[in-house]
Image 1 (spheres, rainbow, N blue to C red):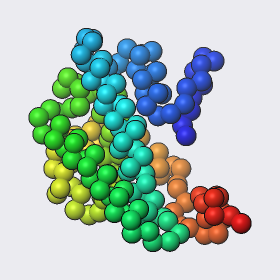
Image 2: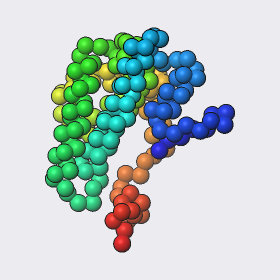
Image 3: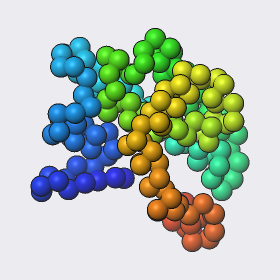
Length: 174
Protein backbone atom coordinates (compact mmCIF):
# COMPACT_ATOMS: atom_id res chain seq x y z
CA UNK A 1 0.00 0.00 0.00
CA UNK A 2 1.63 3.24 -1.06
CA UNK A 3 1.73 6.11 1.41
CA UNK A 4 3.31 9.53 1.69
CA UNK A 5 3.97 11.99 4.48
CA UNK A 6 3.81 15.57 3.21
CA UNK A 7 4.40 18.38 5.70
CA UNK A 8 3.16 16.14 8.50
CA UNK A 9 0.10 14.97 6.56
CA UNK A 10 -0.05 11.21 6.02
CA UNK A 11 -1.95 9.99 2.97
CA UNK A 12 -2.25 6.36 1.89
CA UNK A 13 -3.73 4.59 -1.14
CA UNK A 14 -2.68 5.57 -4.64
CA UNK A 15 -5.91 7.34 -5.60
CA UNK A 16 -6.07 9.26 -2.32
CA UNK A 17 -2.46 10.34 -2.91
CA UNK A 18 -3.26 11.43 -6.48
CA UNK A 19 -6.25 13.47 -5.30
CA UNK A 20 -4.34 15.02 -2.39
CA UNK A 21 -1.38 16.05 -4.56
CA UNK A 22 -3.56 17.32 -7.42
CA UNK A 23 -5.62 19.47 -5.09
CA UNK A 24 -2.52 20.74 -3.31
CA UNK A 25 -0.74 21.59 -6.57
CA UNK A 26 -3.84 22.69 -8.47
CA UNK A 27 -2.84 20.48 -11.42
CA UNK A 28 -4.22 17.47 -13.26
CA UNK A 29 -7.80 18.21 -12.28
CA UNK A 30 -10.52 18.79 -14.88
CA UNK A 31 -11.94 22.29 -15.38
CA UNK A 32 -13.74 23.28 -12.20
CA UNK A 33 -17.44 22.42 -12.11
CA UNK A 34 -19.65 20.20 -9.99
CA UNK A 35 -20.22 17.88 -12.95
CA UNK A 36 -16.50 17.50 -13.68
CA UNK A 37 -15.74 16.92 -10.00
CA UNK A 38 -18.41 14.21 -9.86
CA UNK A 39 -17.02 12.56 -13.00
CA UNK A 40 -13.47 12.70 -11.65
CA UNK A 41 -14.46 11.09 -8.37
CA UNK A 42 -16.59 8.50 -10.16
CA UNK A 43 -13.79 7.36 -12.47
CA UNK A 44 -11.23 7.40 -9.65
CA UNK A 45 -13.51 5.18 -7.57
CA UNK A 46 -14.27 2.94 -10.57
CA UNK A 47 -10.54 2.27 -10.90
CA UNK A 48 -10.02 1.91 -7.14
CA UNK A 49 -12.98 -0.36 -6.44
CA UNK A 50 -13.32 -2.21 -9.73
CA UNK A 51 -10.34 -2.22 -12.07
CA UNK A 52 -7.77 -2.56 -9.29
CA UNK A 53 -9.33 -5.31 -7.21
CA UNK A 54 -10.60 -7.40 -10.13
CA UNK A 55 -7.43 -6.83 -12.17
CA UNK A 56 -5.29 -7.74 -9.17
CA UNK A 57 -7.24 -10.92 -8.49
CA UNK A 58 -7.16 -11.83 -12.20
CA UNK A 59 -3.36 -11.51 -12.13
CA UNK A 60 -3.11 -13.52 -8.93
CA UNK A 61 -5.20 -16.44 -10.14
CA UNK A 62 -3.71 -16.34 -13.66
CA UNK A 63 -0.04 -16.11 -12.69
CA UNK A 64 0.66 -16.61 -8.99
CA UNK A 65 -1.90 -18.78 -7.20
CA UNK A 66 -0.24 -21.82 -5.64
CA UNK A 67 -2.99 -23.99 -7.18
CA UNK A 68 -5.24 -23.74 -10.22
CA UNK A 69 -8.76 -22.58 -9.29
CA UNK A 70 -10.78 -22.56 -12.53
CA UNK A 71 -13.81 -20.84 -10.99
CA UNK A 72 -11.68 -17.99 -9.61
CA UNK A 73 -9.75 -17.65 -12.88
CA UNK A 74 -12.98 -17.45 -14.88
CA UNK A 75 -14.67 -15.04 -12.46
CA UNK A 76 -11.81 -12.56 -12.20
CA UNK A 77 -10.97 -12.68 -15.90
CA UNK A 78 -14.64 -11.97 -16.65
CA UNK A 79 -14.71 -9.00 -14.27
CA UNK A 80 -11.37 -7.59 -15.47
CA UNK A 81 -12.65 -7.79 -19.05
CA UNK A 82 -15.98 -6.24 -18.08
CA UNK A 83 -14.26 -3.27 -16.45
CA UNK A 84 -11.85 -2.78 -19.35
CA UNK A 85 -14.79 -2.91 -21.78
CA UNK A 86 -16.53 -0.09 -19.89
CA UNK A 87 -13.36 1.97 -20.08
CA UNK A 88 -12.80 1.09 -23.73
CA UNK A 89 -16.33 2.27 -24.53
CA UNK A 90 -15.73 5.50 -22.62
CA UNK A 91 -12.44 6.09 -24.43
CA UNK A 92 -14.11 5.47 -27.79
CA UNK A 93 -15.98 8.74 -27.25
CA UNK A 94 -13.44 10.73 -25.22
CA UNK A 95 -9.72 11.30 -25.45
CA UNK A 96 -9.43 11.14 -21.65
CA UNK A 97 -11.74 9.92 -18.90
CA UNK A 98 -12.96 13.29 -17.60
CA UNK A 99 -13.82 16.44 -19.58
CA UNK A 100 -11.36 15.49 -22.32
CA UNK A 101 -8.58 16.86 -20.11
CA UNK A 102 -5.65 14.79 -18.85
CA UNK A 103 -6.24 14.24 -15.14
CA UNK A 104 -5.45 12.06 -12.17
CA UNK A 105 -8.23 9.71 -13.29
CA UNK A 106 -6.15 8.97 -16.40
CA UNK A 107 -3.02 8.49 -14.31
CA UNK A 108 -4.85 6.07 -12.08
CA UNK A 109 -6.20 4.00 -14.96
CA UNK A 110 -2.95 4.11 -16.96
CA UNK A 111 -1.18 2.22 -14.19
CA UNK A 112 -3.60 -0.67 -14.88
CA UNK A 113 -3.96 -0.15 -18.63
CA UNK A 114 -0.25 -0.73 -19.14
CA UNK A 115 -0.72 -4.14 -17.54
CA UNK A 116 -3.63 -5.22 -19.78
CA UNK A 117 -1.80 -8.07 -21.57
CA UNK A 118 -0.48 -9.42 -18.26
CA UNK A 119 -3.94 -9.21 -16.70
CA UNK A 120 -6.03 -10.57 -19.57
CA UNK A 121 -3.65 -12.13 -22.07
CA UNK A 122 -1.87 -11.24 -25.28
CA UNK A 123 -5.10 -10.37 -27.12
CA UNK A 124 -6.03 -7.60 -24.65
CA UNK A 125 -4.89 -4.80 -26.96
CA UNK A 126 -6.90 -6.12 -29.89
CA UNK A 127 -10.01 -6.45 -27.69
CA UNK A 128 -9.64 -2.94 -26.28
CA UNK A 129 -8.26 -0.68 -29.05
CA UNK A 130 -9.36 2.53 -27.33
CA UNK A 131 -7.57 1.54 -24.14
CA UNK A 132 -4.51 0.76 -26.29
CA UNK A 133 -4.68 4.22 -27.92
CA UNK A 134 -5.06 5.80 -24.48
CA UNK A 135 -2.19 3.71 -23.07
CA UNK A 136 0.15 4.63 -25.90
CA UNK A 137 -0.64 8.34 -25.63
CA UNK A 138 -0.04 8.42 -21.89
CA UNK A 139 3.05 6.20 -22.17
CA UNK A 140 4.60 8.74 -24.56
CA UNK A 141 4.43 11.48 -21.93
CA UNK A 142 7.85 12.22 -20.36
CA UNK A 143 6.52 11.84 -16.80
CA UNK A 144 4.99 8.44 -17.61
CA UNK A 145 8.25 7.31 -19.18
CA UNK A 146 10.09 8.40 -16.06
CA UNK A 147 7.61 6.52 -13.85
CA UNK A 148 7.91 3.39 -15.97
CA UNK A 149 11.69 3.36 -15.52
CA UNK A 150 11.34 3.18 -11.73
CA UNK A 151 10.92 -0.57 -12.01
CA UNK A 152 14.34 -0.75 -13.66
CA UNK A 153 15.91 0.95 -10.64
CA UNK A 154 13.86 -1.11 -8.18
CA UNK A 155 13.60 -4.62 -9.60
CA UNK A 156 10.66 -6.76 -8.57
CA UNK A 157 11.42 -10.28 -7.49
CA UNK A 158 9.49 -12.36 -10.03
CA UNK A 159 10.37 -15.90 -9.02
CA UNK A 160 8.16 -17.62 -6.49
CA UNK A 161 10.50 -19.35 -4.08
CA UNK A 162 9.64 -20.62 -0.61
CA UNK A 163 10.35 -17.26 1.07
CA UNK A 164 8.14 -15.42 -1.42
CA UNK A 165 5.39 -18.03 -1.04
CA UNK A 166 5.45 -17.64 2.76
CA UNK A 167 5.12 -13.85 2.45
CA UNK A 168 2.53 -13.76 -0.34
CA UNK A 169 0.34 -16.60 0.97
CA UNK A 170 0.51 -16.26 4.73
CA UNK A 171 -3.02 -17.62 5.00
CA UNK A 172 -1.69 -21.00 3.81
CA UNK A 173 1.00 -21.23 6.50
CA UNK A 174 0.36 -24.03 8.93
